Length: 303
Image (cartoon, rainbow, N blue to C red; front, side, top):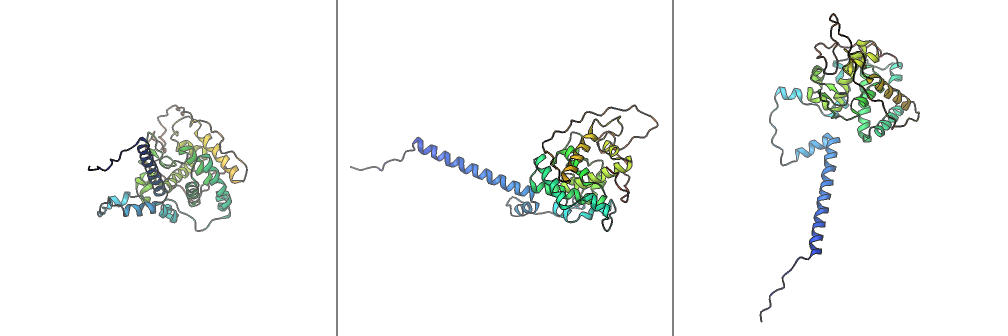
């Protein structure tokens, strides 16, 4: 009698075990992919190496002059060469005692970094990079770094990819189409979402408006696009409240990172005056056609 080999059957337990194993493999693969994507996001050099070894990367074609003009430089290059903004604003060869007092100490910068990271839920390394960029820019253009950081906080909550319905982009919500000339030496308007480039250009615009308006309040009103309105809807007060909190943090005082900020209301329109020329702003209300360069030797209005 011929004996046939026993047929192997799949029991319910075996099938369940198989699906469980497959589920674990998919989960591990997904976590690994997210880890690699996060590393590529915070480390552009690593991202370039991964792309270079990718089998799906096509051969590079020669770039035209137009493409080279709009390609944003790597973040590392912008951080290593802070003097690139010197084309727009002349920088002094050495800091004076007053400027050193304005910039503060390394300890103060660390206190500010840690507080902002907790308040706006930003990774420590990312917060350190953004705060460092603000301090470097502040030194270049003689503007209080805490004011720059306060504007960044209110404008985007430190989201480098924030974009408003009217086209304001990045950390400082810069209207890149209006201020395209300020991005020329930083890679073109595509660099508007580059955090360091956005901080540089946004700070230059803020400095320009503070100088033009004669006060920080007037500068903030123009920056938010309310120059032609009776008030700024509370925007300036909100920025200054954040600024004063940052000053206390830098001084070593205990400030809760969870304190609430007042909401900004819509600005109230001022009566139109035919003889008065429109004032350019960073917003989309009035298109800017002439950019007056600020005087780099003029000190920021004392707070």
